[in-house]
Image 1 (cartoon, rainbow, N blue to C red):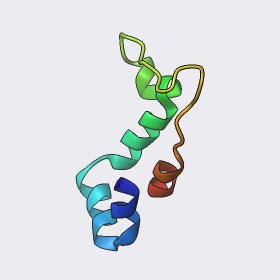
Image 2: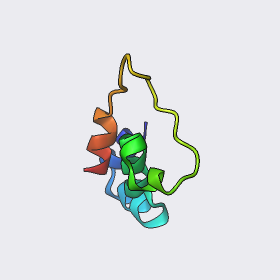
Image 3: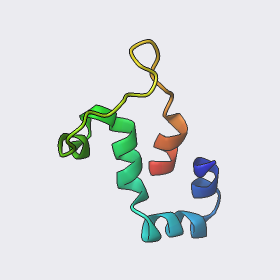
Image 4: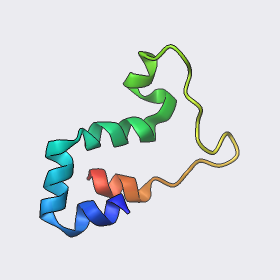
Amino acid sequence: MLSDIGTDDKYHATLLIEKFDVVTDLCDFMLQQKSPKASAEEDPRVEMGGSASKPGFGPLITLVS
């Protein structure tokens, strides 16, 4: 849904960038434990998908790009 909103219309993409720290937040979300923000947190993060399968981040990468 975010990918559709952010890539379909220049106004919506600009709004996401200006009003929210969406690029940093999505990068942090995709990097999970490897994110620089994660090292500053006291508790370790729970990784999505566990060791069996990692989630597909294709639409989020398109949105950040």
